[in-house]
Length: 286
Image (tube, rainbow, N blue to C red; front, side, top):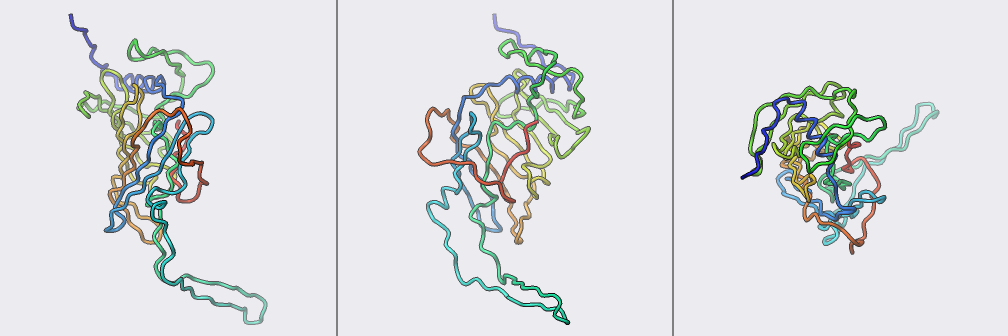
C-alpha cells in the first residue's frame, strides 16, 4: 500500500516555522569546495569571472584572490595615465593645497562585481539562532531531528500563503513575507518551499550583500539540495546595477558551481581576501 503524504498546513506561519526548522536541521559536509561564477553585461560587453573557493571548519570561507580569467590573462596598464596637478595658495600666503585630478576614463576593474567571499550555505536568516532556554518544536517529517525554537521570540515577518507552485518539478508552497522590523536585515519578501520537506527552492530578497547598489535592488535566489541540505545555486539581480565610474552592469548573476565535499586542501592557494569597498560579503546569517 503506497504511503500517504499529508497535505501541507494552511497556516502560513506554521509553514514558515517548519521551513526554519528544516533548514536548521540540515547538515553539511565538514568542508566543501566550489567555484563562484560572476556573470553580467558590463555595458554592452558580456563578462564572466570564476573564483575557486572552499568553506567549512575554523577557516570559514577561503577564496582565490583573483579570478581564473585574470590569472590566465593578467591585466596590464594601457595607455598613459594623465592627471592635472595644481597648487593653491591663500592670498596672504597663510594656506596652501597641493591637489591632482585624474583625467580620462579609469581602467575597467578586473572583477566584474568584486571578489566574492561567499558560501552557498547562506540562508538569508532562515536558520534558528542557537540560544539557551529554547522550547523544542518538532520538525516537519520524521527524518528531520527536533530543532530548538524560542517560543517567545518576536516575529520578524508577517507571513501569508499566496498559493502553490511547481519549482524545478517540486510542488511548493508560495509564501509572502513582510518585514515587521529592520527591513534591511529581514530581506526575504517571497519564499517557495517544498510541500513535503519544507526546504527552500526559490526566494525573492530586497537587496543582497552589504554594498550599494547590490544591497539596494531586488534579487532572485534559486536553491538546490546537496545531500538533503539546501544550497544556493544561483543569485540574479532583478535590476541593473549602477556602479562607480559610470559603469552599468545588467543581467548580473552569481552562481555556485561544481560543489563537492572536500577531504584535502585543494591545489590552488586560497585565502580570506581583505574586505574592501567592492568585496562581496553577506551580513550575518540571522
